[in-house]
Image (cartoon, rainbow, N blue to C red):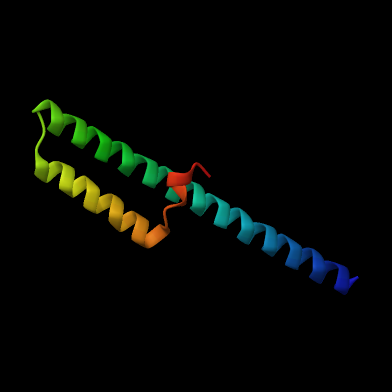
Length: 78
């Protein structure tokens, strides 16, 4: 009986770890999507004359920082 409980505990811990990893991936994707949208909005505003190159550069740097930390998987539609 102890072996069964040990295996069940290991499986539960594994499933919990996989679930946490998936949640982290989804949160990273959402953050990347938001940064990409912010960059697009800054660039659009700059082109329309209502934004600044500095705002576009800041948005680009934030996106590049996110990519450096988390990868660019969100750009590929995963």
